[in-house]
Length: 430
Image 1 (cartoon, rainbow, N blue to C red):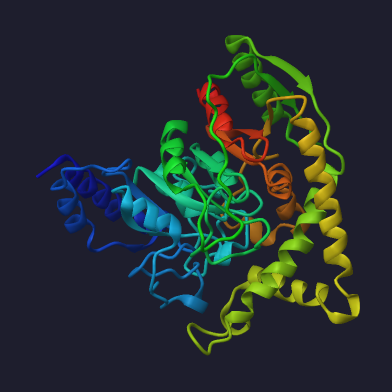
Image 2 (spheres, rainbow, N blue to C red; image 1 turned 90 degrees about the horizontal axis):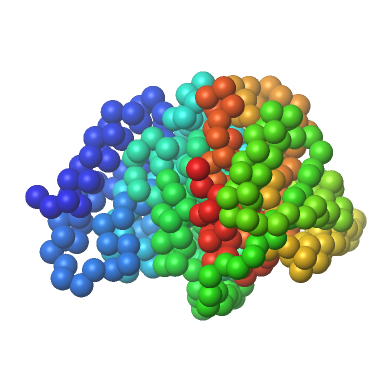
């Protein structure tokens, strides 16, 4: 028995032991041991040879249940592989199974799954963050090497921060979204989570690139030389818990001193309107995307089977897009989105990266989000949403802990500067 089979068996044992309590995996690949045995017989090895990957349940994996953590699609078995899955398999990675998430990626806490909330392995009484809750938790719990998630307004970076792992949102268009069951077409991006920046970088190198199935994809250039003098942009946004800001400031100061980097304060026009800008866009685009879930071709009618947060977004989108408004609210949100994006472009002409906390507060207690004011729940995304509105790349790396709870440092770089972001983030690792 080879090393890959042994590793897969170990992960399966961890899943068997921990999953009933943590509720991370919704579907485990029953054939993975056979796939591992076949892989061990290969002479030519791919770039991700033997890497074990958990996949968020809104990314199609042929033959596996891809249910978006919803009763709407609870029996839906994907008939094809998403482009990112095709690339992973071609690189000799192994898909261990499908993990939990906020239903249809609508949520930022991990509490909105139709199949029960996911616990945070790093702080079991607190939320793991969402919507890629299972992806971050699977890495943190030692159930896989890396995971795939999707990020619309922080859905990779928030759970990465709360669970103490690394999570990256690539630049818009860097990774194909073909095969992703989308939440918001203008904001969604598939990205990797892992234990280290290096793990994330290896996966991104494989899954990025132009795809004829996704016309938004772009081939971004790679850096040809090492980082030279780096100027770090310091962005301050209101509403961050003092303890978190203090931890992040100390971590940034330590990295800047060690690397002999420079710092410069930056401002982003209209960034205080990010949350208010984001949700009209998401509501409108999600409403449009869910019209195909009519119960005729597959699954159930979404209005009859979906949970509270999904229905809130559908009905909100229905109101915003009524003909009588002639797209007024959506167009206003798009206008502010462009202002924010242009401000980021201007900022990145002055600095190499921008740093700030990933989340404004610590994760709340499991189940508490359903009782909190909606504005407070949505405000938890205030620091991650701007990168999606700007289309730039962003990553969360562990920065330390507060009373045993992980806190993430968020680093952003300009659109298309994903490799540069990874190089900077690697220097920021603890």
